[in-house]
Structures are given as structure tokens and as C-alpha cells.
Length: 208
Ligand SMILES: [Zn+2]
Picture (cartoon, rainbow, N blue to C red):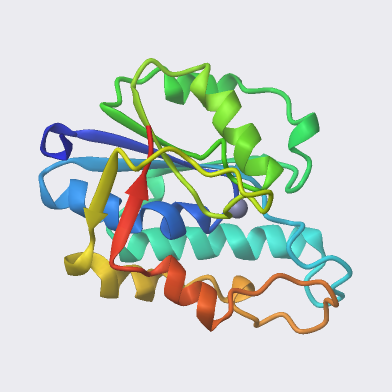
């Protein structure tokens, strides 16, 4: 199935989901002669509320730069990364999808979207907004399992990413703001060791 994918589009709700969900898949597609385009829906500015060191504007800029560096590390150039800059955490009010619509109208063979079974509202909104605007084949990746126990269907694709795992982990390390480097936000988000392990597991699962 994947061997025929020439043009892959990955849509990430936040600047890090593209690598968490799909860094192995992206490398696999590239290894087989295809290429990847990435769309990041939100600016990521809500991960560290109240931080004086990283107020929202600075955080958004830092997270954009992290995504570009991480994606560059796995071979996706900045010209293939598109930031929509919607408000992080505000997916209920996102509007203005002209640029997204133009991108989704391009002839991708495969579009990877977050899962409708994801616990994060921005992830579900990203899926809903994109799913109705693409005619390509779609696979979904789950980042945050639904705490109510809602489980996605069995994977359509379970990709062994062993050959790409080290590079994925290295890419993930580029997201310093999401790895605990910001310490002055009481409710700031940080990927801990358990999450890091989960995010760099040897298999990436995708459901239809
Ligand atoms: Zn996210």
C-alpha cells in the first residue's frame, strides 16, 4: 500500500504532532521515493500558560522553529511545511481555511490526520476540518487516547519503523519547549520519559 505513495500529506494539530504521529511513516515514504508535506494547524502558544519567559508570541515562534528543525532532521524541507497559525486550544473558533483548502486540493496519494478518537479537542477538530476537504485516501494517528475508554478501530496499517526510530527520537528531541525546558509555567506541558518512550515505539499505528 505505502510503496505507491508518492505524495504524502501529514496534518498536525500542534507543532510536534507531525513527528510524534508520523515521523516513521514520513521517512518510510521518502525511502521509497516519495515526499512529504506537513501542515501544522495551531500556533502551539497554549502549552505553557502564565510563563513569563515564554509568553504566547515567543512560544509560538519557538515552536514553529522546533517543528522546522525536527522535520529538517528527517528530510522534510521548510518549503514543504505550512503553518496555519490557528489559536492553540481554540479549535471551536478556528475559521478561515482558504490556504488549507488549497493545500488539501493538491493530488496527495495519502493524507494522515489525527484521530477522531483522540482526547484532545484540537486533534478532533483538525480531523473534522480536513476530512471534509480532501478526496485522498486518509489514515489516522492517535496521540492522546480517549480517557473515557473510546477506542479506535483496529489499525489499517501498523508500520515497523525500526529503521527510522533513532532518527525519530532525534527529531523529537528538537522540541525543547515540549520536553521540560520551560520551568516557569505551573501547568506547563512536558513530554516525560514514559511519553517519550511511547512516542518513539517501534511501530506506528494508523486506523482508517
Ligand atoms: Zn497535539
